[in-house]
Length: 308
Picture 1 (spheres, rainbow, N blue to C red):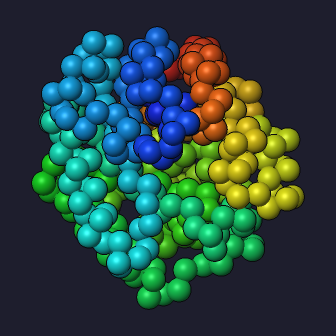
Picture 2 (picture 1 turned 90 degrees about the vertical axis):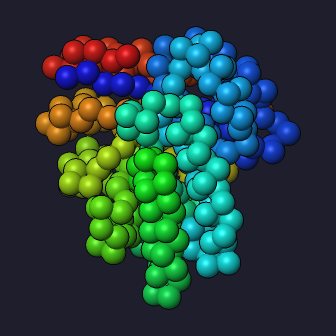
């Protein structure tokens, strides 16, 4: 068994494509090319070049391929529906244009952090749940996005439970999976967000394996996480204070996670993330190299033959 590792621009702090503090996209691509990872996510649409020919040329120059794009947005509001569908077409069209259509690629759907949930991120007992009518709106939006992605572009849609959004905790993940069939949408589990939600990442990967299509790896700095919960920090406030760290420097048990992935014979891409303030992007390359080296060494202790 081998693992294919990718990296996301979020490791350089890229969350908002218009943030003036973002490093220049060419610098990020250069860093990714030096990092050892063979694949990458697009990051927020509009940060990387949106012309397929330009992006393909930049990727080829660094021997990289795009494994996924992301819609991080308000998935609840029916008023946001048209914007969501436009974004779906834009992202999936670009993914399809820069990749071999025979390769499995993903559209990651994340309900964005909401004011109503931001300060209860990680607190399942305190977080308000979405009202039924608004939940139904979100399910319709996710279903329609998913059908466009798969039916028109051959891109696999997956929902990513995320701290501070309305799909964060186990009960919300189970509810979504009960409401939308596997033929429509799959599941992306993120080890960092699972831990942040108060759950065990290895157990969750196993429990949800029937719907699992794509995986994100993160690690959590336990002291910052404890502070974030005690002070009820907003999720990105916690990120700016370093709650996400390079893999192997935190409290997520990757030996247990590797054992589960071996048991599942997981063969799709795994994308590494480490949210940070873009003002602190200078340390990003060192951190992602540390993550890569740790995962490589951990793999060698298991029956995983190699990572790319």
